[in-house]
Image (cartoon, rainbow, N blue to C red):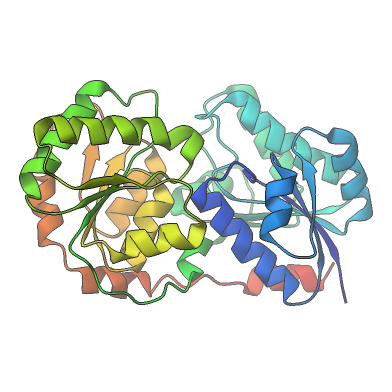
Length: 339
């Protein structure tokens, strides 16, 4: 039986990871011809990506309320929506959308989220008291599940849904892919040190610099390219812009080495068997790197032997390990059947 769903997440911002999760979720729901409305910062962009969906603007609360009233279920996620590291306002927004659905007596699914960190006491209280009323919760890491268990809330522990992406097999072309994003602790000094190390460790290799969310990533990627060129103007560097999600995946997966900051860039590297070095700007990156025994750099610390560890990685082993992370839909689908 066809159902109506409203999807809430960090959608429309052209962030590769969140858009990939949205694609996976929409494709799954459309297999059974369910009707979908996506809350997006850019409804025109979101509608252009998918057939037969509606999209409404992030802060158009009258449309959000109207869409939820007509729906059977709100799906919140995936990604790291319920945390206050980005901002307390962001946390309150996503919780408020969930509250609207609960107030309207609608079912709510929390989809493959990373919960926390939530440092604000009011934010913790709000999250705990709203989440305990949700119909089904799945989380993508053990720490999130442990936090919910501490709050007395049951959840399923799953891998990130991006692990379910079917990435076309491609030969590694010997290049080095570098993926950076702006962040409060990203400094000129770090960019210079990274450029120096990259130039000296990968002599003769092309360096492909890939923004995953251009509004946030492009400027720092351009700074990195400039730093590399100042060290050696003969190195071939390219900053790729305006890539589709499919083109981003193809570019990352062809590389021999990947130096990446964003969670889902690292994940694509692992799935593709690319030797990957993380840059730890968030606990989720550190957890992912530790799960696959990947070396990672700290933004505020001197480099050690991370590049030696990077070169010693076995891409085939990484790819094999990633294949053990199969995203399970059973709890999600069972919940939908009961709506």
